[in-house]
Image (cartoon, rainbow, N blue to C red):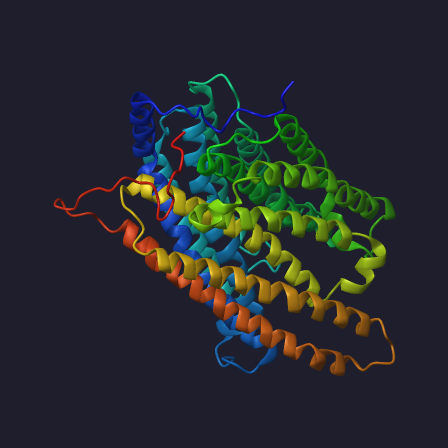
Length: 487
């Protein structure tokens, strides 16, 4: 029996289906563009804050005369802009569009979702102001005060309702691989987000239990929110662009359920050496090591699907970003599993190695996949082509080289830093001084990525501007994607 799954959608191109798909895209247009446009705005703003934080790492006296620009406030502002501004809003935009496409149903509650996008932006902006003036919670990943965090929770509820409604109205019997992951994201993460805020900010936990709750949540932001959306996007876009089905349906099942089973346990490996019960930390280590199962199966599935089609990377910007992100998922996950081992953790803990690892997941994997998804989606939603193929290439290479320059040297520098910190004969200040060359490399990487983001923002701005009545709508196929199967 063949193990090859059905393509993301049937590969027969029929005019009624194309008309129906265009109608679905029209139903998505306003909510998806609100979330996508907002996400790109927060990406550019967050990049500037990240660059400022990077400079302060090696030049701590830079812009310190005003408290909101001190490192202790700039970094959490950058973090929240990136996670809840760029990543989450881009993820919601892609999630809504994919669910509508896969269910072949119009997006429900469009006006409510547009209002949700406005609420999300207001809550995030207000939360960032709170952090900047010193009213943040100081709990990593949930620094925004509870009142504004509840605004996010309300929007999550609307997104969940829209997603479930589309599934109930679906016009196809088959449930696609991408839908499994999307449902995982919309059903898992709102619960995690609300519970973490209530448990920590509601006074139900304190001390070590609060730390355990914090890492249970923080680790699952990537594993049970961003990762399912990213993998769903890869599973959808690779077959769409190359016109071939996913290699193995059975591997898809194994990858999804092993992710659901193991990832949620993994967060406590960050607390190795802390004052927690040994069993709690060990469970985190075991969960992290078992993540080899979904990572290997997903990696094999994506690679085997691409076999014979790698030449398409030259002409498809969507495929270029998505494949880069898929390969990065494998690397970051393998690194994360190895990092959870006590013998390795005792070296890299509390070093820049951990920072490099986090960026590999959120940026090299998830953000690159979202870039590819937006390059595919926006022409179909706006009826326009991208303004410049050269600028798209500049965006890709600035982002790809930037994250490589960020992750590589900082990983090496962090490991050296950890070895030196474990040597009692070395003065601490000499260890700190030894990290400065790597931190300058981090800043250079930040400049490259910021350039890429500004280029991307400019391209998106051109796509979102109102079209004049005399302007001809173009076939929304994306720049330089000849032969793309409209499936």
